[in-house]
Image (tube, rainbow, N blue to C red; front, top):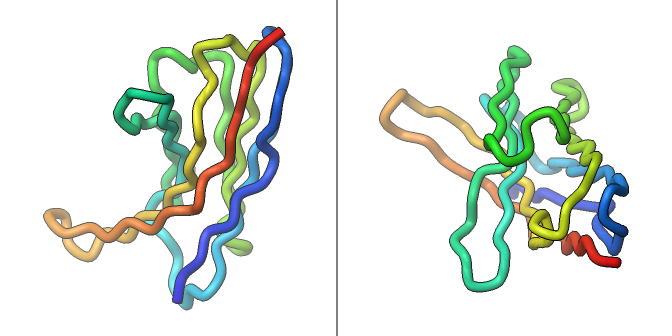
Length: 120
């Protein structure tokens, strides 16, 4: 059974930095994509950043130039370096791992979420 375990959330002041990490276990295959989503109170879950096994990245416009996603394919880990954090970045951050069975059929695995709070 695949499990994703996140770490690294917490409270940080505006302008500060945090690094989130996620480790996938229980998988005998590699994930086509891994990444991070977030959900703020009263809002829908949204994409933050993803990275494919080949290293291609995709970022939400709101985090471009501030956040950096990286992964280690051999270890099935994905990290999110968050710099210049803003109060609007406050949310629960979820790790995601995706398998593309065929282009029209994907399977997503999710972590339990880690809270990031940006406040003075």
